[in-house]
Length: 140
Image 1 (cartoon, rainbow, N blue to C red):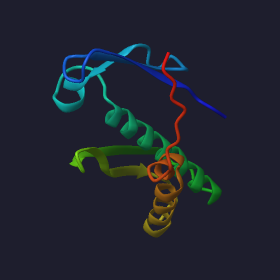
Image 2 (cartoon, rainbow, N blue to C red; image 1 turned 30 degrees about the horizontal axis):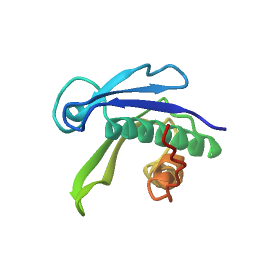
Image 3 (cartoon, rainbow, N blue to C red; image 1 turned 60 degrees about the vertical axis):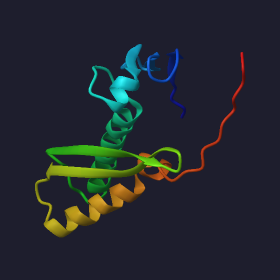
Image 4 (spheres, helix red, strand yellow; image 1 turned 45 degrees about the vertical axis):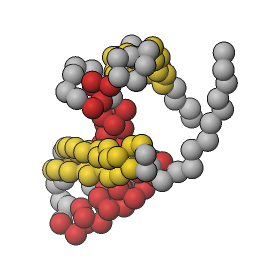
């Protein structure tokens, strides 16, 4: 399975503007830029999108793990806070903190904690945060 997203950027870093789109159409030319990333302007940014992806991925992974134990959640609410810090002459995503609130009939605290830890370690977005990045870059 492969999924596609794209970005278009025009201009320099601080005054330039960009748009982000997804194959599904959930995002279609959503604006982003320096002010949406480093200030509080309207629009999105890569860290916010990564947080949304991580929260969604984790929630689905937790649901799957619970299902393997015969449990079904009434709800799983996950918030991801992505930290972007200055590091070595640039910026780096240094941390993601997940806050999870779940309603799971029949689950005890230990079963929930075990499932949540397994989902945190095993969801694909958690895994990619430590992955080797490869690239095929071409100048048009």
